[in-house]
Amino acid sequence: MEFERWFASEQSCLDYLCRIRWPGGFQCPRCRCIKAWIVSRGLYRCKRCDVQTSATAGTIFEGTRKPLQMWFRAMWHATNQKHGVSALGLQHALGLGSYHTAWQWMHKLRRAMVRPGRDRLSGVVEVDETFIGGKRPGRVGRQLGGRALVVIAAQEDGQRIGRVRLVRVPNASAASLYAAIGQSVEPGSTIRTDDWRGYRALGRKGYVHQTIRAFMAPVGEDPLPLVGRVASLLKRWLLGTHQGAVRPSHLDYYLDEFTFRFNRRTSRARGMLFYRLLQQAVAVEPFPAKLIRGGRTF
Image (cartoon, rainbow, N blue to C red):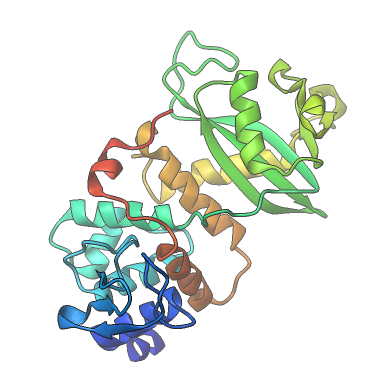
C-alpha cells in the first residue's frame, strides 16, 4: 500500500527517477551543464549545447514503450520475493500479454543488479568451482562435458558467509581461474582453495594462498564449507525458482541476480532493495534486446 501511494501516477515515478539519476538537479549528458528547459514530451533541452534528453535515456529503461509505473511494479515485485521471480511469474503478476516481454525485463533487471565498479572481496576468501547442468557420461574431474563451470568466491565473516562473487569460466585452466579471481578478490587477500594445479601460482599473483586438501577436513565434512554452501544454495535456487530452465549462454545473468540477493539476504528493508536496484538501473548502460537474446560469450 505504501508503494502504491508513493507511485500512484506516471509523473510521480518520473519525478522519483529524476531524483535518483540527478540528485543535485539535472545534468546534461553531453556538456554537463545544469541548466535546461523542459520541452514537449517531458524532454530536457540543454541551455548550453541544445541537446535534448530524457530521464530514461542512457538507462535500462531507454526506448521502453511501457509506462514507468509498470517498470517500478516489476522491480518492486522482483525485490520483494525472497527467492526471486521467474519471467512467467512476473508476466502473471503484471498482467503482461507477452512472456517474451517479461523475460527481457527480468534480464534487464538482472543486468542492473551488478553495480558498476563494485568492490572486490577481501580478507579470507574461499574459492572453488562448481558445475551447473546435468552429468554427462564419460566425463570425469574438471572436464565440462556440456556443463557450465562457475567459480565461486565466498568471503569469510567469522562463522558466517560474507559477500560472494560468481563468475562463469570457459574451463578450469590456470588462466581462466586467475582471471575470475582477479576480478573478484582484492590482491593481498588470503585465498583458500583445494590442491588443483590451476591454483598453484596464486602466491605469485599477489595473494596469500592456503591449500586445503581433502584429508585435512574432518570425515564427512566439506574441506571448503563456505563455497560448498553457496554452490548448494545456487543450484537449489536455479531448480526451484527457475525449474532448471537456464541456458548456459544466459547463466551469467542469473548469477548476477543470485549474487545481488545473497549479498543482501540480511536486509529487512525491502524498500531499500528496490531503491538500490533503481539506483543501479540508472547507472548501467542501455541493454538492447538483441544482446539479451544472444547471451554472453567468452
